[in-house]
Image (spheres, rainbow, N blue to C red):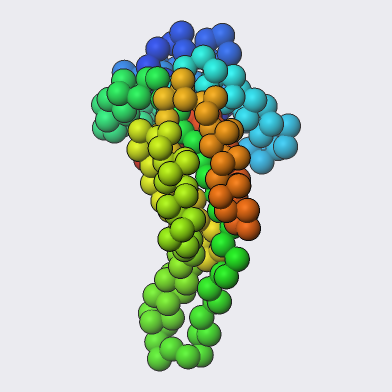
Length: 214
C-alpha cells in the first residue's frame, strides 16, 4: 500500500477521522491509502481525494500538498518535508483562522506565440516565448475594481499571470469573511460586465504557503 498526501496540519484532530493522520517533522500529514498498482490518474481516486480535501478544510485550515505526493512510511514523508517543516508550522499557526480565495480572469487579447524563425538564436526565442507565455494583463480599471471589491476582503493578495490568456488573483481571507465573497463577486460583475472571471472559495493554503513537495 502507498499513501497519497493531501495536506499538512497542526494537529491530528484536524485530520482524523476524515483521513489518516501521519506524524512527520512536527506536523501531521493527511493521507489516503491506496494499492500500489492503482494509477494516481484514476478518476475515482481523484474525486475521492478532492472530496477529502473539502471535508478536511471544513475541520481546520491546512497547507495543501500538490497531488502526486506519495510515501510508504512516516519516515519517508518526514524526509520529503524536511527542513521546511518549521516554516510551514509557522504559516499554519499565523493563518489558523484563514483560507484562500481564487479569482481567475480570462484575458481576451492573448499575446501571439512568437515566430521562432524571427530569432537569431534558440536562446532568444526561448526568452521571447517565456515573455509571451506570461504576458497576460488586465486593464487598470478592472484591476482597480478587483482590488476594491475582492482585495478589500483580503488580509493579503497576489496577482499572477498564469499564461498568455489568463491572470489570477489569490487572496488570503479570514473564514468569517467567506459570506461576503459571493456578494463581492456580484459587485465586480456589475462593475465589469464584459470581463469573464471565476471567483471561488474557500481553498486551503497553497499560494501563501509556497509548498512544492514531490
